[in-house]
Amino acid sequence: MLPPVARKKMQAWIRSRHLICSGNFFIFETLDYSTIERFEKCVISLGGTLISVDPKKRVWLGNHRQILLYQAKASLHTPHHELKQYWFKNGSFHTRFSENT
Image (tube, rainbow, N blue to C red; front, side, top):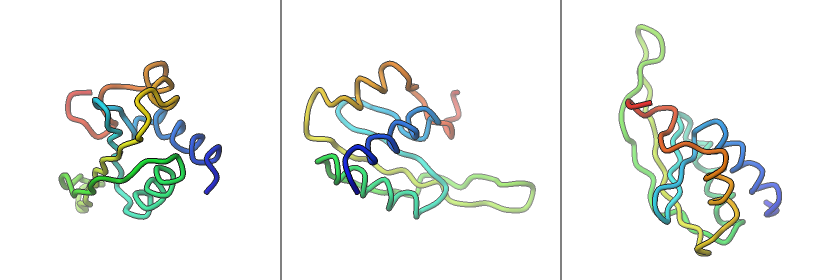
């Protein structure tokens, strides 16, 4: 994946509150594991590394169905990466799956 495409995808995830910045790390939450794989490709394309992927909790979808919420933690090696500046301007401190939003 080319870096400009990866940056645009990550900016879209920031706006949709799937991706937040916490300290020097980017935290990504989604219900679909294949999206985690796309996130990993974006992070690698921008020169970072995926640190961990953990199932966080079960989320109800309707009345009878539960699915896993996955949380990925990544690091971009540059301290003042432009995505962090973009997150300051357009992002949130909580993901769309956080209880305190």
